[in-house]
Length: 198
Image 1: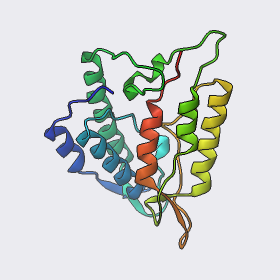
Image 2: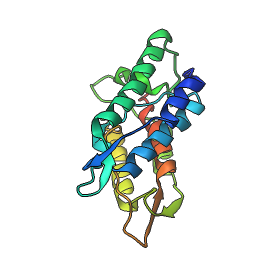
Image 3: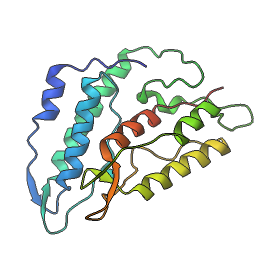
């Protein structure tokens, strides 16, 4: 996988960004979780996929982060990622190996018009497991499982994967547990860079 040369300045920008608040803004927990995810990827030298606004919930009565400011931050990160992608040559990949997330649109198409997902790729999705936790940093188990079912159906039919950047999961009800959001987000990053094999 191509490394993205994030600098300490990039990381500090995301870690210390000042997000103003307003009534009816983006839910702070959702934004903070995505920012932590971006910092984790940057520290690992990995590509940062675009964060879709549809993945962020809005508050109605409480204060949240000002949407325009949040979107500007994520747009800035995407702009940096595109610049890195533009100066890096694509690396050849063997079947089943995931290249950088920034090259998703270049997925190869098998003869007959269908995509060929390997058995190993399908097993990787099917056998993925996630630790559980409770609270706002967890996702409802059934929602994640349903999404993975859609991914497996798409693979079995030789179709493109469901939209990953905009998928949205909610925290479980109070007193119940769900999948650890950080672990699921890391899995989705890897899934987003998965490519069909010719």
